[in-house]
Length: 301
Ligand code: KPL
Image (cartoon, rainbow, N blue to C red; front, side, top):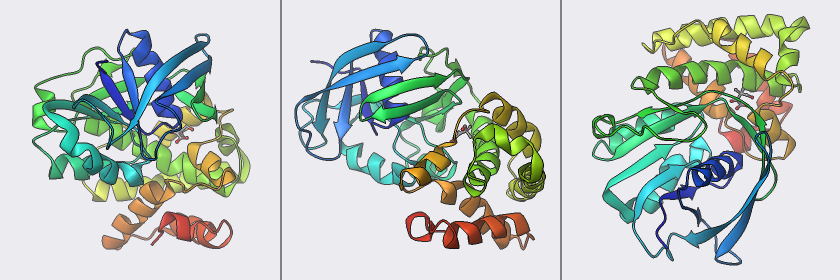
């Protein structure tokens, strides 16, 4: 059977986008990193926009029978480069590869190492979580943008992608804006052990404002141009997702490696290379190492 979209990374995002690609009459298939128990999985969705249930083929890289024409790569950002390189030999010369990761580092590294590939980034604020493997809950509405990371991708826009995704020629800007949001909300939701909306009052709110200023300092030192200051970007997202627990909070709760080193760790390392004074980042990183014991999992500086 011909597969239109291969999906690598069957977390909440991989499952959710898989369901909606299928609803656009695109055939999908999962790529598994370990030997699957069977050659199909039952993918189920609940939450917003009703329930859906479908059988989806699944195969390992070694057992894929046809080359990959379109790939949705939605591993955690720290796994993105290895995941891409593991399947690179299976991509057709004109394959379209959509990267759906938090952070900015993985997308930037892949685009500069592989400019010959049609690489795109998907930036989304749609909310979802997994109840159990392949059982995804569509938890919140959001905006989604897809855009080119390489010149060859810019020449071949992806104009039809589900969930009202808009083509965004300046996807770098969206990635930087999202990095600012994640760099404020995610570490603080772990530090204060709270839902996103709880960050908008009390002590957390003062830290929120101070951290957002430090994020601005580093982002500007790097020469990046977000559309607004970090505070103005992060505040409406915290309001809109007030009842959500951030992905980093959920990772800590489930004792999974978080992506905090891609946000807080990344900005701190960069900021220090410009000799910036970053007391909020320092407090957070110390707490993550000692109080939450994230160091071994997260590779903080
Ligand atoms: O992207 C998110 C995340 O949790 O990783 C936000 C926007 C902060 C929503 O929770």
